[in-house]
Amino acid sequence: MNRETKHMSRRHALQVLAAVGITGSAAVEVLAQSGKEVSMETLQTAAALIDQDFSPERLELISKAIQKNIDQFGIFRNTEIDDLIEPAPIFIARGRI
Amino acid sequence: MTMQENELVFKSGRALGSMIRTKEISPVEVVEAYLDRIEQLNPKVNSFITILRDESMAKARRAESEIQAGRYIGPLHGLPYAPKDILATAGHRTTNGSDVTKDNVTHHESTITDKLNKAGAIMVGKLAMSPFAMGNAVLTSFGNARNPWHLDYSPAGSSSGSGASLAAFMVPLAIGTDTGGSIRGPASANGIVGLKQTYGRVSRYGVTTLSWTLDNAGPMTKTVADNANMLQAIAGHDPMDPATTNDPVPDYSQALTGNVEGLRIGLPTNYFFENTDPEAVRAVQEAVRSLVDMGATTVDVDVPHADLAGAALWIIAMSEAACFHEKRIREDWDQFDPQIQRELGGAMFYTATDYIKANRVRSILQREMEQVFRQCDVMAVPGSQNKPRKLQTPDEARASFDEIAPSTPRRGNTAIGNMTGYPAMVIPCGMFSGSPTFPITLQLYAKPFDEFTLFRTAHAYESVTDWHEQRAPLAGS
Image (cartoon, rainbow over all chains, first blue to last red; front, side, top):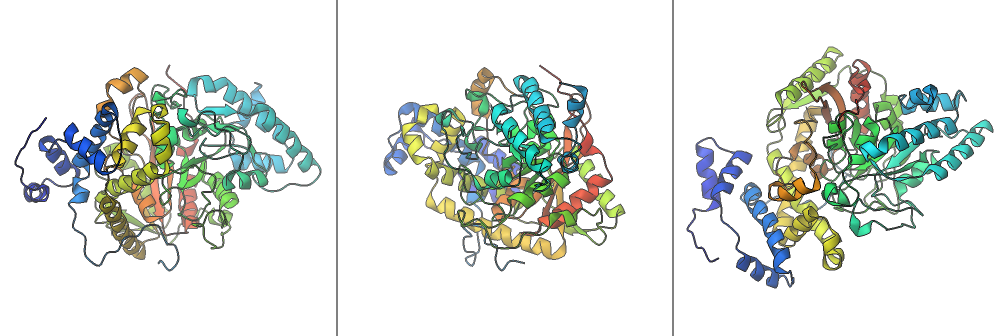
């Protein structure tokens, strides 16, 4: 499969949806219905990049999770975070509140 | 089973403990009553993976001798308990609910079970769960635990056996684990009390990892007082778990006063009440009104980025799980259930940037929760959002596999507790209408290491309602 489709950027699409009152998980759902599809070829290339040797059957199974992730994590991936925010890799109890 | 033993299993742990202390009953009678009930009901509920009759009866006889000799230890002495089968217990199988580790005998003891054993509690078996706390049990050789409110329905997960066993009165005290809601979900689906305490309050040593930075193991009980007694026994610093703190552990029994005068309850104006069954919303509002009638006040609060908690948590949890299981993914792939295969395989393709960004979201959520708790002492949100789902057969699960979406962003009501480390407790506060009926629960959050206020609030509510006394009918197939 070698489909090439022109999309507006995901962030732009979310902004457009927000402007007409569709936000949060509802917006993600809308985008999921028109979203990009991950091909097996793309996945095989990606697996090679991370030095993983998945069989075609495994990649087929994994592709479903990756597709869900693209659909559902868009709202997360498109969130802009202020430069001052550092990661909190764990809950640090001391000195809070 | 005699009538007397039947009645014993319906008493709270606190009531049984009191009767044991005064020698009105013996630990032998109590443990035997529960073992009989487990053996009677487990073929239907499927909530125990391992039952330890001989071993627990021997311990009960020893406890009886100790108490008769005047060596009573405390409120858990002689009481039966069962941990989710993800806690290592020396000399027993610790299956993690997965075929990958179905014959895995552990030779070390988790700190939690060690502390419970030293407090005199008696482990009667080990409880069913979602495989490795994230998979689909119906696709394993263990099968799924069933919901005692209707056996055709799910008890939720991943601490499915803990929730179901409590609702079926098969054990008075249980331990579950919670990485994104796995104590609070089953507590809601089964109508019991579940606590995810502050990260660092209880040791994770000996608990098989799902996510190093999000995992918690905590008490699941029928009543708030029993929950407080369990946390009292298991809380505290552990040199084997560097995340635990040296903070002193308060006397939680002092929280059980029934007094909430002056308590400030935060009610979120965004996210937490969305996509929730109107009956659950009404029940939570009614519960808050009960607390206000007792002297509490309410204040509107806001967690602006709550909608990011679920997605960010899933990225962190699955990234850490994929790293933890890296060798097993390579060598034991075929023994994982397909849901785990899919999620861990997918997680291999998350980027480092995704993971770090999720931890920046964690920073944002921690700051927002700090702001919330400058205005209130507890935050009240729905524990239940909907009725439990109907259980699938293995064939149905495979047929509808593409529709299984565990990586849903709609996890925020519980995920925010794991993402921020804040403690949260679920307690029954109503029943859904219709047939079959299921419990509705209230979820309370508090400041870090302020489980005391959770117990104070939940116990006060419990003392003026009887939702925690509702009995599951064990109906269905």
